Image 1 (cartoon, rainbow, N blue to C red):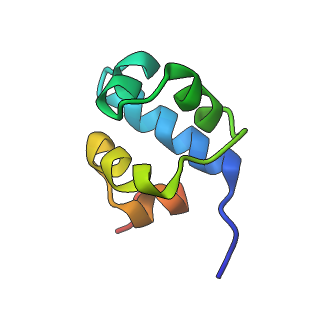
Image 2: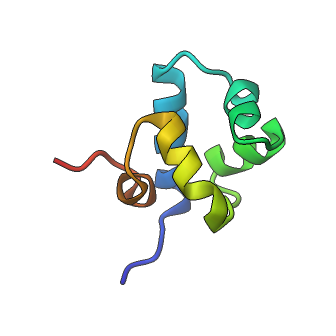
Length: 74
């Protein structure tokens, strides 16, 4: 199993969030978290807790696998 690339993960979240016209704060509110947490993910400084992965993927319209890979899978 490969490690999660934090920069790729963060860039993917940022790209998907912006494509949906959401701010970091709006995404954070959907997940009941702070916008600081979303900012840390997007900058590649940390990963969300495992309990947040499914709601995050749903909010961004991707699968958990795509989220972890940092790219859309065909």
